[in-house]
Amino acid sequence: SMQRGSMLVMIHRGDYWQCAYVIPKGHFDTVKEQGLPAFRQHIEAHIPFVKGRLSEIEDWDHVKLLTVKVDFLTSWHRDGLLCIGDAAHAMSPVGGVGINLAVQDAVAAANILAEPLSRNAVSEDMLAKVQKRRSWPVRMTQRMQVAIHERVIYKVLQTDKPFKPPLMIRLLSALPFLQHWMGWIIGIGFRAEHIRTPDIHNTTP
Image (cartoon, rainbow, N blue to C red):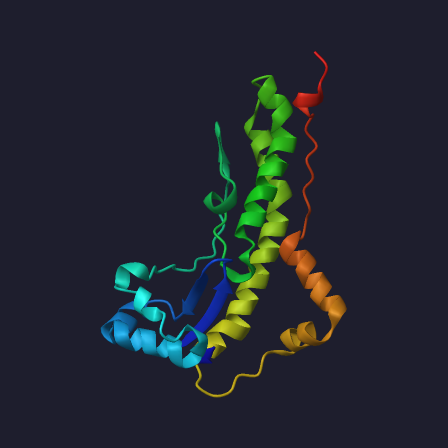
């Protein structure tokens, strides 16, 4: 659901619903000034099936502010330190891909570092190899997220007129092969990582 200055997204979590109430950065104080009853009414007006349940939002402590940030460390490593996942590259919630990239970073790090770690012989050059392998897929994913922010989310938040999605979004909705491609990008990513370290549990002593 969308209206000028905000966008609502409902996510079914199995035994409860999570509501993402998207607003321009820095506008949370404005929302709070309008009061909790107005906040509840706005959600009910745009998502009618929750009517009568929003009394469960008893105070603003039940509303958590998540500030969206997309960034990328210049260097993920120092001697004796390697940053991966959000520590190396904060992602937008768009697509829910942050956890995917964090796991892929971990798999790449294990593939590159497991053997030298077993010999206590990890160099900073080896840490740099992890960043080199993972930088491209992270950058590509962030560019995709920023494009969605700029071409869809920001435009929705700046207008109260009916919003026409950009051509790419309309094509994704209409063409199954593009839906499959986008599902692959979200689920697998731009560079798939596969575990290539020895299975120590199946190693004969």
